[in-house]
Length: 325
Image 1 (cartoon, rainbow, N blue to C red):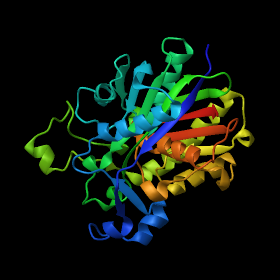
Image 2 (cartoon, helix red, strand yellow; image 1 turned 90 degrees about the vertical axis):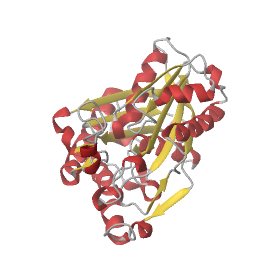
Image 3 (cartoon, helix red, strand yellow; image 1 turned 180 degrees about the vertical axis):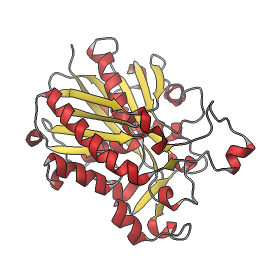
Image 4 (cartoon, rainbow, N blue to C red; image 1 turned 180 degrees about the horizontal axis):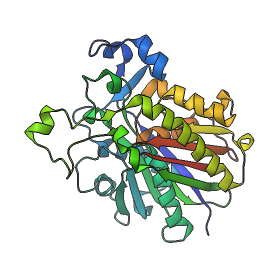
């Protein structure tokens, strides 16, 4: 089996910044309330002319440039998203066409906030077995398109953005383990009720505001801490490592209190946690990968470092991965 690692990273964040003070004008909330409970100060919002694929393509181009590859070098493109441009074709197909990556197979996966870790696991297996040489995985979301801006409990959390990584064979290190999990019995805690085959769009679903994200935050908070802790433990166990070996945790940026609680349970100090939630909020599948990209750019990740990715989201799904950079 080949060793598989990340050889290029990229990101794209829309230009528009929506601050907590801006939200104070939209819903009954305050900057203090949002910051204390979530750690978020602002988030990025895509323009009306930007679709999820547009965000993904810009992140992809930066990742390819960093990897010193051309789109024609790609064999596989996976886009993790819950806000695709349309129900079909896949957003990955749109990305493939725009990049002119003619050789690449392309598909989307829907694993919400754990989408990037799921995509990482899938792409790693294709390359490890020699099926493909180079893979592009992207986490991209335009959550503003499914945000109910009248719901103060959810609209303060969400933002738009995209991150991308290029995977290929490496001589040493790379992806050491991936652990994935799901508990579909709790899927009602976080979902978008309408717009699919169960409840197609109708006057009733639109009037009932069922095409927006719905969340039961209190229940999710406790479950997220438990599942993210467990996923991290399992991934480290599979890699034959312990928490003292970890140089940096790059978690899904859902809520700073969740992240800090997970780190405390794992016995990992706060200075080993990468956080950018203050700037971007929760970008679902884009959160973990964008945090990884920024940690690389800021020099927080060096060659030989042991990195723990840890994510949890709608499904309910979770995933963790250990990477030796």
